[in-house]
Image (cartoon, rainbow, N blue to C red; front, side):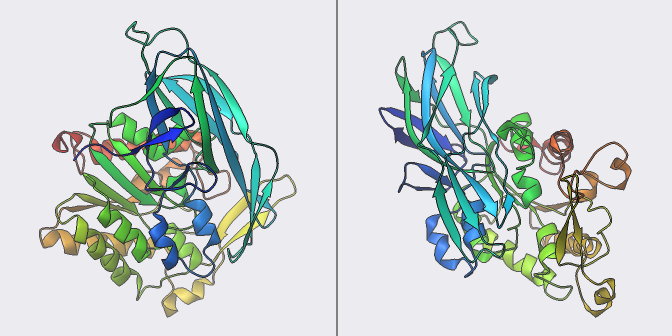
Length: 399
C-alpha cells in the first residue's frame, strides 16, 4: 500500500499532515501518535504516556506553494517531569528536500507531570507564537511551485493554529513510498537531538525512501496491547519493533513473562498484518547496566550532567529478574520459533547498531541515550542492515 496522512485546515490553508494516527482538535490541530480510542486503556498513572504520544516525533506537514514567505502560528508545550525539564527541539522547514529554515520551537505552554505520571497540570507561558519563514524564489526545478515540508519538534506537544502565505497553499499529494511503522523506546523517540530531522527513524526512512510512522515513545515501549492493536489497524508495508530497554528499566517483565508477552504482542499485530514483514530488534548497548536488572535510576552530578543506570540487585537475576543480555537472547529465540513456522519475521541484534566495540568512538552523554552523531550512525546501520540490498527486508522488495 502507499499513502498516509490526512488533509487538515490551518486558517485559510490546507496541508497534508503525516506521521500521526489521530488529532486532538480542542486547542487547534494537535497530532497524536496513538488514537484517542486507546486512551481508555491507558494505566491509571498514564499522563506521561498521554504526553509522550502527543509529541511530534516524525510528524510533518507537506504542501506545495509558489509563496516566498509563510507564517505558521502554533503552541508548543514543553514537558516537565517533576522538576526535570523536558527537551526543547527545533521546527525545521525544507523546500524540495533542502533545509531553508530551522528555529528553536517557542515555549508557549508547560505541562508539569508527576514523576509517576498520575497527574498533569498545564501552565500557559505566552500567547501562541508565529514563525516567519522565508522560502526563496523558486523550486529546485526552476518552477515557482515549491514542495515544502515542516517537521515538528519531536519532544514537545504541538498545537497547529494557522498557516498563511503570500501565495496559495495546496496539500501535497500523498507519498507513494511504502509505509514503515516503527515502535520503540526513547532511543527511537530521539528527543536528545536538536532537530526533528535528526531522529534516527526519520533519517533511515528518508535514506530508504519510506514513509514513516514513528511510534518511538520515551520510557513507554512496554508491549502494551493497545499499541499492538493500533499497529494491527494501521496499513503498513513493513513493521519494526525495538524492544527491551524500557521493560528492563521498569522491571515490568521478568525472565518468565517476557517471551510470552512478546509473542502476545506479535500475535495481536498479526491480526491486521498476517503477511507483512516484521523486524524484531533488541536494544543497543547500555554500558555498565547490561547484566544488572532494573529498576533504573538517575544520578545527578554537580556539573549538570546525569547518569542513567540499572539500579537493581544483581542477585535477583538468579531469582528471575530480566537483564538486557537476557532480553536479547529471548528476542532472538522468539524470532527463531516464529520464523521456523514460516512467518515473515527477522531479528536484528541491537548491539550491531551500537555495541561494545563502538564505545571508544561514540558517546552516550547520560550513559543511556545517544547524541546526534550516534543517532545518525544508528540510522545508517539500520537502513543498511534492514532495507539495504542484502538487508533483512530489502527496500527493492517493498515496491
